[in-house]
Length: 170
Image 1 (cartoon, rainbow, N blue to C red):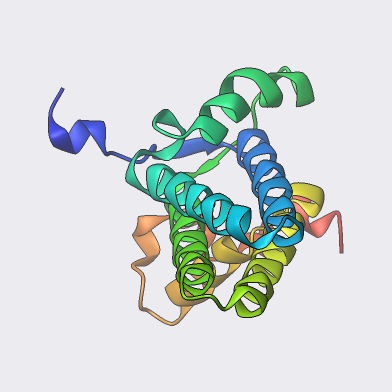
Image 2 (tube, rainbow, N blue to C red):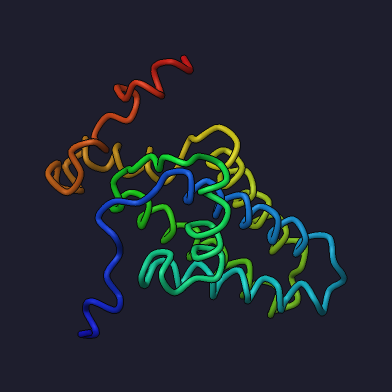
């Protein structure tokens, strides 16, 4: 296996697995916010590493990703719901940046600021987990419309609101 193959993000992913991973992120982030200061830094670091692993290769390298794909998502639905991988990777990259900022803030002793950043991350991940609304995917679609991301990078992403499951909710 080449290095490129080892760190390739899947072109399509199971949406149920992505939502389960988001629920695990919510759980870890909330625990990070509420535990005592020394533990917060370690948990924020673990959250950051998890995002880095998912950005690097999708669920293949991430404990949360593997748990979601192989254990949790099959219990949610026997039939996977496949969606484009590119916007999910973009969303994971946003999570990587946010968790990295929070980790840095915790390391620098700014626990309240770190908790605020994680609070925003919790809201975004909770929207994904509970409602199936991926904020990163929505931003990705907006970037496509603006011409910043090529339309052919993800045809399904340009207008997420035209998807049947999204129009049924509104």
